[in-house]
Image (cartoon, rainbow, N blue to C red; front, side, top):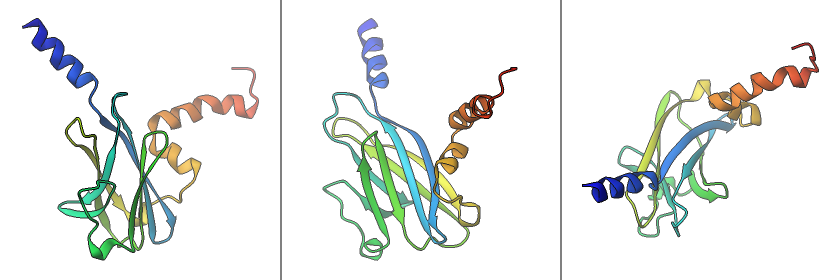
Length: 153
């Protein structure tokens, strides 16, 4: 029983996960999404894809091919720091669901979905990333007295 519990614990502890999914607008009609993930140190490769239901926008999976309607509008790239970036041109008005899917050859796929409303999108900047992250906002608020030079706190 103990070996089974140990195997399950270490199996879950070393699995990949999507940590955060942030988004902003590059310009009025273009979307940028950053999917931050963690993977086990022993993982040799990471694959990423963005979907909307069954619709595949783009992928880094070698076995899957991007659908023709999205070839000029959607692009997925992996960046250092465990970030999978999605660029999407001509975002439609209203709300849209986008799902970031992360997979390694050794494990199952994990995903995170976010609802994007075009009229509420912030422009891409360091401030928009801070506003979407509670930790970043908390850090900003705690550092504000230091930045303002208030020494009486």
